[in-house]
Length: 173
Image 1 (cartoon, rainbow, N blue to C red):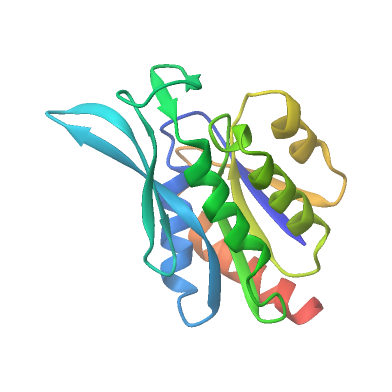
Image 2 (image 1 turned 135 degrees about the horizontal axis):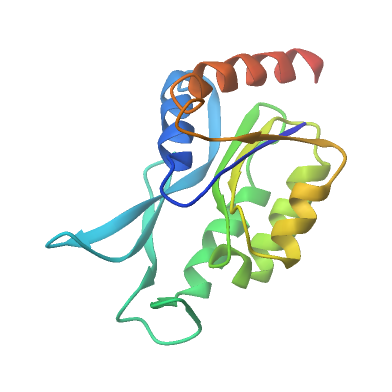
């Protein structure tokens, strides 16, 4: 039971997922969202934040390769958080992941964890890059996922729709 949110960069996928997470807070949420690291209106990198309050810098202009665009990616940090996805209590968890993107997919542990979650019967809501190839396209092309597009006209209504989708998915488990 997986719901994927896609759309162009900057359209609000993360904002939609975080708003849904806020409304779903009474449930056991497992996963993470990303935040931009900014200074003087310039984006310097990205921080991963779990719903348990842990965080780490996963990409930054000052980090060494491997790189995605201008950012060095800390694959080991992504690996640590991916491992936690597999150790969560699956029976009561609702999984939220932001995002299945190029940086995150540099981590084999992340790709493996997301692959297992996609096979799981627990609800998974994830944002996914609009473009990217490889695992990103594989995930979007699965016949057993719902793919919703975040646009200027849909983004304000999506958090409530996601909450309804999650509650329906829980009933179907």
